[in-house]
Image (cartoon, rainbow, N blue to C red; front, side):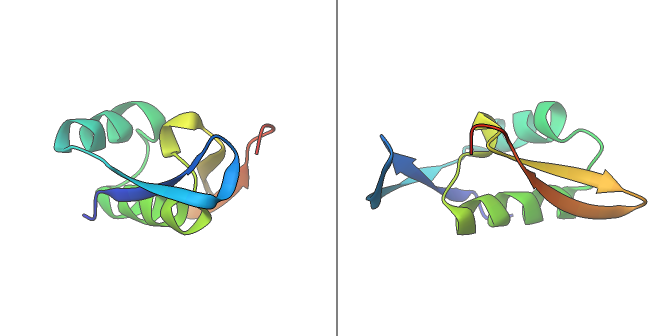
Length: 78
């Protein structure tokens, strides 16, 4: 699984910094943020967050399983 995500720095969209997730952080993400997800769904969530430039731990975008399908939902603070 790729472990790099992109995170906006202080709301400055033009300036992005790459944040790497350690294997411990990936495990924490799977156990706490998306425990109902398969490893493949969790990897897809990380890639989606990377594409949107958000941190999955900030819960700006949520990955939700509905009727067996993975969907993404924006958080109120996004």
